[in-house]
Image (cartoon, rainbow, N blue to C red; front, top):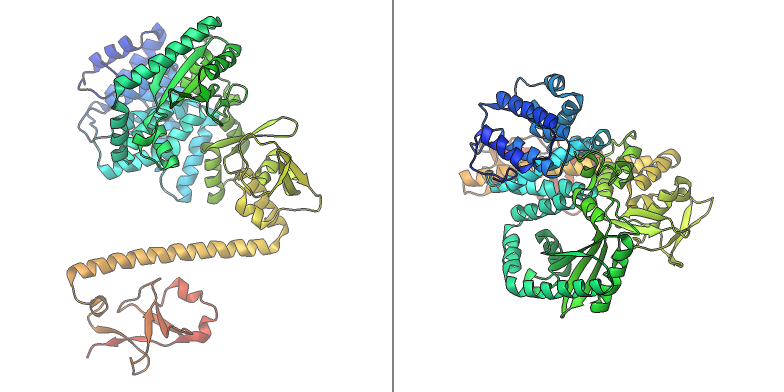
Length: 605
């Protein structure tokens, strides 16, 4: 029985026995603590059922199993059992702390808070929720590991909710959780989350890719076998021991290629990949030479992540060669690199103490370092936070200083971003930049592996134009702070822009409300809308004094209907424009007091 997937078994004793049969390597003390936690969970949730009708405790056990599959410690497994238990009546953090320790209680509490947040909301409140979720990593990354396991299990068992809800969950996963797993170096979790998200957000494309990958399975197997045998044979000649595995690429990866190249899945050829495990770094580079000797490498497809690891600690050599007329991607790495790629930051808590603790130093991960620097800063501005989230979870590029130092920046970063990354004083005085020795516009997005040189002038200073084009949250914050302190006109323009955005949002809401009202009215009565709108005591026409014989236009921003109080003003070319009396847009029209005219709804006779 696979504990990590949904199944028909619900007997708690059978499930616990299957758990230990699947994960037998935990110590006696760890098993005893986990079993006490399991009994505690059963006592508190015995009568609870999920919306699908299954017992409440099945999902927490599967979450714990996912964590055990990654080899995480007992505290993390118990927190996985309890991750949503604080939402159950009668269970408190103090109860958990007293019986299972402060660490378990803290991880459980932080995970429970995250579970209650609706991350897809665009409000400042929810932006703050995402920030708190990310910053929770600084105190204990296991909070995020538990939450990732929770999301993964939910995605694996998503069929019990309606299609609209499935799409919303899938969108949240692809926007937040898969990129976060990637930043923590957890490639297998990231890939499965992406594939499951595609399955529910775009089921037609998912099934299309699945069918194409399944086609000609024997033909592909024969093709890969030839390539594998050729590498084994030539590696053996050079005395290089290797282990090779082959796989079809993940569905989401194929989907991204389809979008990037504007092709159907049946038009793509590089759907296959080989992974070669060597014993040493030197052997990895030797093997690249062997592979390039066997087949022609494709231009621009070699990436050295050993010498230049990704921000999440990932290391490997990637190359794509033309094998028998088809592109074939080959990844070359050591066993330690492969283990790090699979488990990422999770390997810091592997239960086999003393064997894996040195594989990932959490403080070396770029996302953790960035959060440590930003944790104490005031990020109350939603725009800045949206940029920060993009910095942390988006794609990255690597660029160099003339001295050979490597900087990792979000894709799309400019020379201005680079300058602020070097030092705030450099960013404030930038006047020009060179990329690989050639002058470039400081607003142009940088390219991967460029050598960047910044030109400065002590008389220079930040500008609003720079604020509009920079990509990183640090550059935006520094430029914004300088402008606020030194340019009095900037605050006026910023305030005006904020007011304009508020007005636009209010008007959009008003239009949506009025559209809904119109739809309801059309359903009730098929007669012309204006004639039947509002109170039947009015004709729907507007009068000035005793006459209605003039050109009138109803404002779309507030869509006035009888008997709502109205106001009007004289337009230069469109006649009399009618607004609701409480319309914000009307009251912000320049010189409105001189252009206003008294209007009223005409009463029926």
